[in-house]
Amino acid sequence: MSNQEKIEISIEKLSEGKTNEVMEILGEEVETYLENKYGNYTKLYNVKSDMDEEMRIMYNIYCYVKAIDFENNKSYDYALHSLSSVEPIDEVVTKKSIEEYKEKLEELHKIDFDSREKKLKEEQEKKAAEESRKEVALREREQLLESSPPWIGMTAEEVRKSAWGPPEDINRTTTVYGTSEQWVYSDYRYVYLENGVVTAIQD
Image (cartoon, rainbow, N blue to C red; front, side):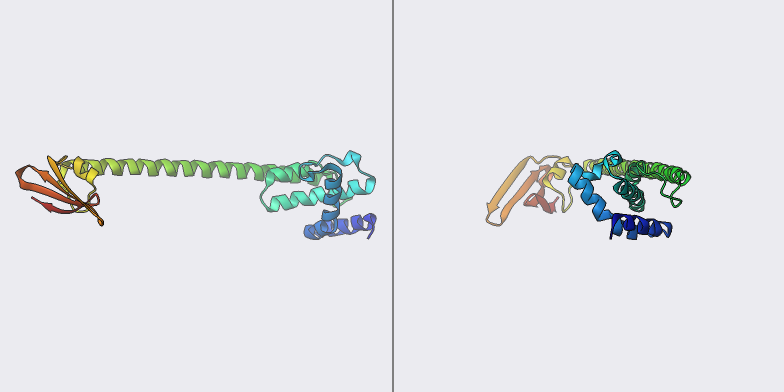
């Protein structure tokens, strides 16, 4: 199929809204041309001045279809970038329709940006609220520890922060199974810990 035939078929498909078929017809050839001539073709759009007439037309159609593809993938900035190279295509894509499409993409880009900003703000607020909740819970637990005697399941650090405070003496036994401790307090009170966790209390 000659380039002229590809152009004619692509314009017909474009008029029918069959952009995927247009990309199938033109995509590989245009991208191969750009890559061979410019290397990283994905970042080039305003290069039509170096093309012959047929390739320029094919590239023009390609950029328009690529803009639609980017829009469908919600990549509105890339869609705008691609559309910036598009010129009117026969009667199928007019100057007015290009301007209207640009306005649409700019609005979608703004909405998408605002949406992402809103989402980021919500995530930051949620994180801040969670951190605040954790801090409140930690303070409440510390207050509870300071006003309460030891209980089963406390860690050694929590026992020290409890109403009983640190022990007067510690009797420690170490075996292959771990470390057992007897914390001795006044008035014949005792706290027993296994591997740093309270397992029994005697008062």
